[in-house]
Image (tube, rainbow, N blue to C red; front, side, top):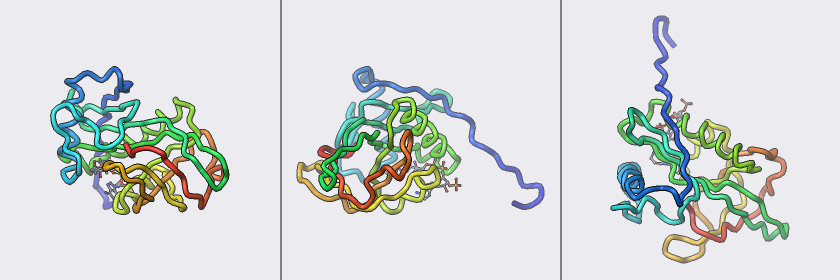
Length: 193
Ligand SMILES: CC(C)(COP(=O)(O)OP(=O)(O)OC[C@H]1O[C@@H](n2cnc3c(N)ncnc32)[C@H](O)[C@@H]1OP(=O)(O)O)[C@@H](O)C(=O)NCCC(=O)NCCS
C-alpha cells in the first residue's frame, strides 16, 4: 500500500436469520429479485416468490445495508452418505451465496462468509459443505473453505443423478479437517441449495 493510501472498510451489514417456515412472501419476493440480479444465468428463473433454485434451505441469513437486502446465504443441515466408509457425515450444506452486484467487491462477501461460519458454529455442526464453480472457489478459500477430492453425487434440478462436475468444499467448524473422509465420493442424496 502506498504511503497515504487509506483502507476504506465496508460498513457492517445488519444481519438477520430466519427459518424457512417463517420467511414471509414479501421477503421471498425481495430475495428472488436479489437472486435474479446475482445469478442472471440460472436455469431456474427467480420470479415472484420463488427465492430458490433447486433445493430449499432451512435457514436464511440476510445482510441489509440501509434496510435493503444485499447479501444472503442459505443453510440446510443434512447427512452426506459416504458409501465407501459405510458412514455418514453431518454438514451444514450451504448455497444461494450472493451479494448484490451493486455492492460487490467491497468486502460484504467476506462478511457474509464470516456470518456463515458463525451460523454453522451456532448450529453445532462439524462441517460446512458446498459445491461451486471453479471460478468462485478462491472466494471461499479466502474464508478457510478447503477443496476436497472425491466428488459429490447428487440429484440435479432436472431430476437426474450425477457426480457434480465442479468443486466441492468443506469448512471445518466443530471438527478438524482430519476427520473429513478425504478422497471419498459423497452422496448428497438431494438437491443442491
Ligand atoms: C461471490 C460473491 C458472493 C463475492 O462477494 P463480494 O462482496 O464481491 O466479495 P468480497 O468483496 O467480500 O471479497 C472477499 C474476498 O474474496 C475475493 N473474491 C471475491 N469474489 C471472487 C471471485 N469471484 N473469485 C475469486 N475471488 C473472489 C476477493 O478478492 C476478496 O479477497 P481478499 O479478502 O483476499 O481481498 C459475489 O461476487 C456474488 O454474489 N457473485 C454472484 C453470485 C455467485 O457467484 N455466488 C457464488 C455461488 S457458488
